[in-house]
Length: 389
Image (cartoon, rainbow, N blue to C red; front, side, top):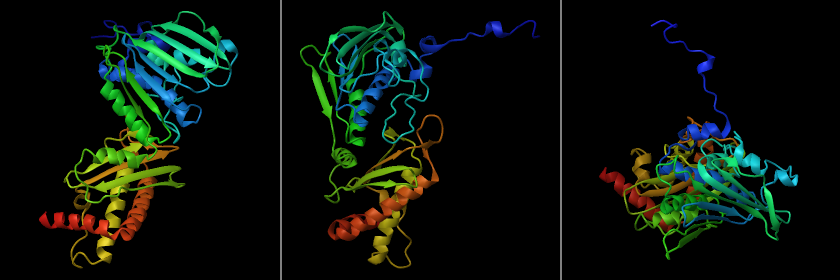
């Protein structure tokens, strides 16, 4: 077939801009048009509110699944700047809801969470909603603006004075886009609970108003951080080998960030390790998890050798043998995280592995030394398991 039979030139290229592109190819921006994508547009709005709390500008986030199928996300921060009021302190309300902002929510700082897939922000939610209402209470004025499928119906208008502050965004997912518009309370609750465990300053609630007469609500705030997370995981793992949770948090300039670790051995042979980078799950591991394993193995083997609990000629206990029954949470927060691939499922960076290995080896080694009875129970179980291999 010749080029003349199938001509292709610039006239055949369709250029999609802004929110038109989002509606045309929604899966590119929220992953899919299934329930997974539906939950993603909730996270795209919740991200901004959560980061207001983590930055100290707000005290709490309230997420509500309304009785008519909408979702409302509210915070009590200072309120998004409103262009109509002459505000210039950052992206204004209309820019936030209508313009693509690559990099605004990019996972590049340890003090923020990234919940959107590509750092574009709430404009994706606006584009994929049949209607959206934004309310801003800022500098004594209550502003309201409404949208339909990403298009403003009118400029922001004043709804009168107010003594409160904050931003509330309510939206109704578009049935023309999504296969279902029924959010799962359990899925949203799991992610918000996880965020609260990983960010001890976060106070977030989720309410479901859909069941007639049976509204349900949960609130998450965990001052204990990773220790609280581990206690939650251990409650599902059976009896523990030792009563105390081993945990620490450390800042390391070598990685321009912090590491928080909590661990405990339990009776089940299953190893349960959960890793996070800047509050995002890393289901495929990475250098932080490799460093954790290195550090645990080094600390346990040093303790065993010092007390001559193995024959001198016997090989060191392996990482897998030491990991039997171990439950752990490993959370790193980095100013400049490096990931392998675009999905951010695997953390990279050789310095991260070294930093975490050193921290775990030092802290766990000290803990084993200062808790001889619990250390004996842990090491005894590991050695017994190794002899049965």
